[in-house]
Image (cartoon, rainbow, N blue to C red; front, side):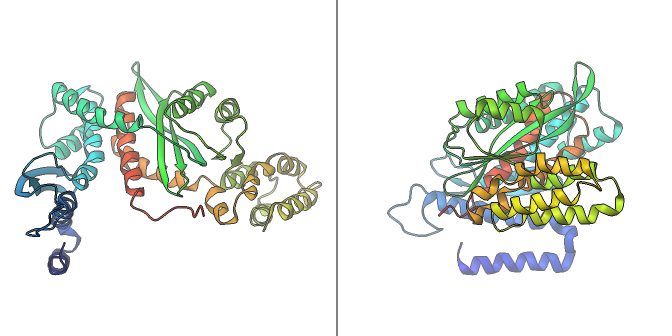
Length: 385
């Protein structure tokens, strides 16, 4: 995009903000999306508008109007076209993929008669029309194909593997249950993040984690040198079975929380938390182990159960000291996945209840695919040099 065009776009955005504030967010989104699609077409063609370039792959061919329903209202967009066809802006697709999945989840509730009047109203507002079973099936099949391709894509070497699970309410055989959403994130040899896989399971039992790990390995996951997770019993057993020689870092944040259950008096909590932090913030493993020994001895008489728990459990949070110092801060907890889980929850709480596993997997996959795609444009997460 030329400098003058960028200035023109900026002027339009500032004008809308000054006149309408955030009430005009739909118009702002339309301007930004239209501009992003034009830039994407230029990259696809290998040439800007009216530019003579022998290396260009095709020619611009105007625009095609497209109306998109979003949570900020109906957007009338101008989708750039090329003469030979085959071009579709990824910026538009990424922006509406999770929106489409959310609509489908709500629509399924509406069609199958499990929704409230509030959900029905939201569905009609989002979709803009009365939804039938046939329409839901056709739309779901199209979206599911793209999401399945992403979930089954080939993997490679990922030195760091971060794991976590959360729960969503799903209707199974006319009974509402909490189903586990298993998520795996990897950091590759270049220090970039990817969401490697997601699965919906009845629980976090060993069998489900085993199946999840086995599928990651079938897709080509290799080279894992550290696994980071909380201490789920099923995850622990499955990890030991399928990644038997890979070191494990137990999430330090969750260890801090777990310690609270062994503190006998409320007034001891601040000092215990500070002592555990000092262990985790030690400059090296030798110092961390020295501080752990001193801390356990400190609470031997006043809180013997806490002292025993510390000796047995806190060493599992020190594995990260065996890895490069510049990696430790981001590998000592599952906080990255906790933030992802919050984003999933932000989307899924609108649906409240999923009518089946496929509906839940569809929405969660769409959100994760969008996040993982966005990570590809980020700077490296870890410096692996």
